[in-house]
Length: 563
Figure (cartoon, one colour):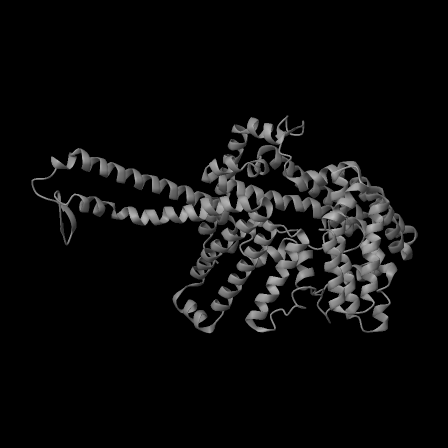
């Protein structure tokens, strides 16, 4: 354990970087408010004293608009129907929830939307009867690919009057694809007739149309869902009210914090303005990176927190909510603890809480080889996993770049971890470094991984142009400043070599010749060269300090969690 004073110093430095960088983002937002308002039409409301709101985060604005219109009332209806069914018709509650989910889907997506979900479900169920993993995966990828066909998209758009209705259908079908895939693959693995009894079409409809996770997740595997739904655990009224009150309180705090960030810091609008993003200071650049990823975290606390609360009221165990990104210091940790449901779908899930220990549920990484086929097999399996995630998210260019960065990051981390775990390196670390020194070295290595992790997240959230801006200004420009700092130490030698008549070289370095100092030192040409060299050195130092500020904003906070 590190000394308490050292941990306190890291904590204070982390908080200082956070708050000062956020203050710089706030100042830039206020300075360019009119410019951003003209370009992006900032919204005005009375929630925070008339402050204008940045509406350019599509996902947050999209779900908040749908929530105000219908989704909140439909989710409240699900809660009421579920509780009534628990009291009056507990044995038939799964069927009642299925019927309610179909009705709620019809309310927001209409008959065409319900028909599309039914079509995907029926096709997946029919293919699952062949009990072939290859056919099930081909079916899932084929259904997913139909969501990207331009001709199919045009047909779907004609079904609705607004773009938001079309996008809601797209998001719903994208998430339902993973649910259908889970049912199909699990159905292929069932051997005993008693187990196959639960893999019927009615249970698949109950799983697919479970409304709290219908539109946006999180992902819950079919065995988890069916096992918990069949247990039918009854909670007392007191515990139900307590769960509801605590959950609503947390959701309101997270929603208020997300809205506050959107009103005080116009980070999404600044990211959409390439000239402004390229002109802000390095402090602001680091603050924008922190604000962007933290807003993403708080946003998904709300978007995943609402269905998680309803699932707990139904007696189900939801996947854990995302972990704060300021405590992440590795690619593996980000994938494992941010979207836990998606991670369990891709890699593996050991459900000890439900006493299901005879098998792990794994859908992508293990079937394509996993880590059981050597180094090349591991690299291939990891690449295929990230390729699937990129394609599932939409398959756009910036998503492939994001997936490639994550693959490189995970591969590098695994390589370093295997190297450090070798007996030779372990013996050397134990022999030459104390436990405290090893923790500090771990934190130093984690800072490199953290900086690249946040860069990949910025590519995911802002696109390739935002990632390129950060790469050029933080990494390339910062390295150039670092190189220049090493180079500017040679400036006295450079000036002396250009003015050999005034200087002589000895073992002590370059010294002025006798008789030439100080009168000839102040000759105009030499004076200008020294002033120019001094200005270059000063500029390089300032640029390097700015680089350190931005780099510290980006990666110091997660490193504190590492030490």
